[in-house]
Image 1 (cartoon, rainbow, N blue to C red):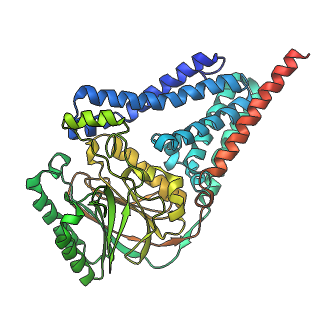
Image 2 (image 1 turned 180 degrees about the horizontal axis):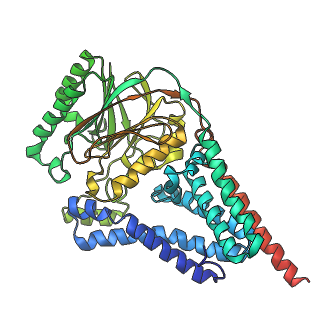
Image 3 (image 1 turned 30 degrees about the horizontal axis):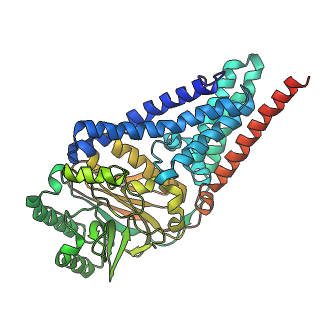
Length: 462
């Protein structure tokens, strides 16, 4: 914020781009592990793809810098408390859905372990981003102010934190039934071994054994694509798992890869083995991992190079809850739990949330901890327990305030047990998603821009 003060639009755009490069360059470098390390793409191609992604994300902040310099007052409360936080919120929201969206690394995830988290069920993660910028603006006002004039921005910071403390005491949702015993399976299969033909039977055996250990739980959750085989090809194995679970009054929810009924499309799915069978197909796919956003001629070239080029097909946006373990579950697979508002339709009717993932694609990098933080934010926004099953971690049971109730040890086989209490009721964010804060931000940005215009008119017409 300070560097943008007094900047011409071009200079502000350059600074914004540099910020974006630094943020996404350090925050998403782990894509190199999945694309080159496990995907076997050449180093030069991997670097080129990551550079393109980072540059595209940085372009949003170049746009932000240009808008700050072009539209907002040069300094003062309208700039620091309203205009800049509003424009930042709008840019984060825009990059969260435009061209499929990439909502990773929003500022609002940072204060999840602070009193400011009390705002999450009301404003969502983008609203939290704006609140952080409001406080940064208040600190900047303190730098420019003298004496008692600094009291007002300091008081604003205090009010923001006091509001978070008060909101954290509000119970937006409440228990809707007795606790349900649950178990999460963590197979800890190394990613570079998982899809080798020789390891398929040992992997299936390992998960069968872990599932047997978990019997006694009402609901058992396996990670994303837990078994390295198409679900269509292992019907007998799945029937055995279903029969053994049902004999002990347990339901199983597992991540699978399946071929669609058309015999052409492939889906990254969740399979619920209850008294029957139900699927949920992943809607938001991971760029450069589950699909390659490149022109058709590049796909043809990738095919000639014998590189991973096949895409998954996205699931329908109108899928329903999964009923398992006596719970109505709002499902998500891996990266798609980063799309909070897209989950609100199901989350509002669910008793709990479930996310199956495989962050082993990114090795021992920070990606898994960034992703865990995202999952915690979703539980907090919706006021629901969230069951998170990872191939080698971080597997966890997350409470309705985003707290870690139980966590499995990383990189080791484990059966994580706990209890999930079904919840009912709707937080404000669940009711309206991002629209309330987006419309408020639009109004604040427009008001700040109008203030600049009035100031310009007063100078031109003394």
